Amino acid sequence: MDEIFKKDIKKRAVIRKTATFDLVRDYVINNFGAVSFTRT
Image 1 (cartoon, rainbow, N blue to C red):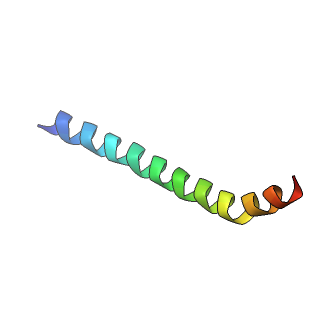
Image 2: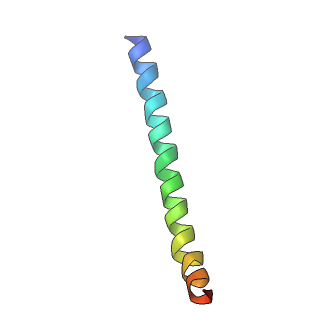
Image 3: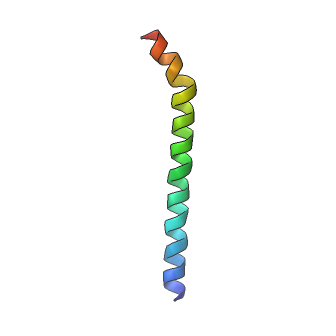
């Protein structure tokens, strides 16, 4: 039981990191992507 619980926590931590990365990437694209698109 404890083993399953630990695996679940690890999986959620990875999902949370990925979600955070996606948010940061979208933020960067929205703020800096527009600037670089106007240059090209």
